[in-house]
Image (cartoon, rainbow, N blue to C red):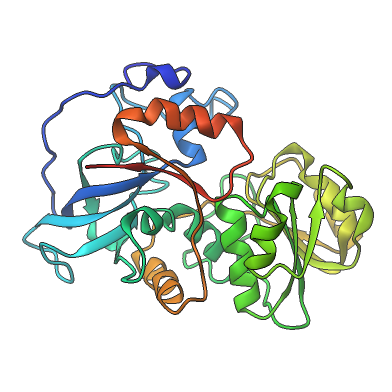
Length: 327
């Protein structure tokens, strides 16, 4: 990217292979995933208030989620060796775009985990940001960094067989993994998506399905313990009425909420800014290898067709993740 705008600003160029610094490894990329921050950055984040908008230095290579093979290791790195297959969400959110749309990328060793042995690079890359987002919302935050959008520290609700969880946007990258993590913890899960995704979500373990094109979930469900709104944004408040007292709403894309209203309803609303974590990715990978989590792929594109991949993302209604493959 030499400027901000639509998918047309993405173009393929030759640049030098980066060199790993202290604490880093060089990864030969096999697959890289599209995430919402990629197109927010591509557009220049026009919807973010100027005081919260990160600065980007152009030209910029987008991308944060990779699966690949370790090509070189800095002298001070232990735990990884040349030839290891690895996955990672790189430097997020300290650096919102880490140059992963490329044949090679440098990565902090602490952001990496060994790739789950039972899946290919395409599926492994798709686990990174979406899997960590679902994990940090539902299972373990794993850090004490404050959110820029709220004063309250997010604390995941304990999930068990007596908990009912509603996942809005359940077919997307975060949603389909959150559904499976909630089921892993024993919860009853209601999945909300368009009707085309019903079979897919029931196969992942959804106990109940709501087609939002036919009925509004906030009008048909009540007494929910937890809503994970993987869509989020300004319309997320509509789910407050579905919660029982003591319940929680977790909007993945934070919207506007009224603390007094939340207190009156007796509910908690908190969100997470996902952070890189090789340790948590290792735990997610073990669930994949154990068959407890499946990673869904919406579509794949060669690296040279990154523009087309972004155009597919703009169409919405994804089932899983969009992945760029690197020869």
